[in-house]
Image (cartoon, rainbow, N blue to C red; front, side, top):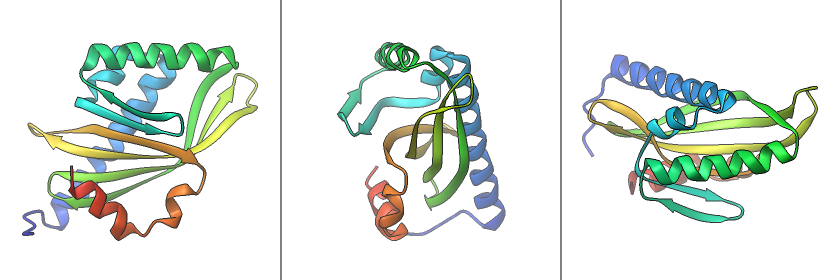
Length: 156
């Protein structure tokens, strides 16, 4: 595959993707379901321990997010913090954003859960969007070689 991105373009793309994740986190913590949904491609996919969800459009994603927050808030959820975001470019139009040690917290700072998440991001019409979201126990994705993860993302 021929890469047209140079060093500067890769750095800019990584920054844009990090900003995308930050925007998503801010919308998540504000419970701005419409904003969160606007950051995803259509269709979108969630691959989580409870199963795979294929989400056809933004309305379906907003509904899914509302249900998810209803369950989280029943556990006392207040906000999420992310320890580290690592962006890996797969090619000029696909990248991985690894969210390491994502912590769901109560208002008193106590932890409800800690997970790692991996987002496949795609460049659509000049904007980076979230396309596939995967989550699991902390450390699950560190056992996978970066080349294997990048190969999976290239399929999208």
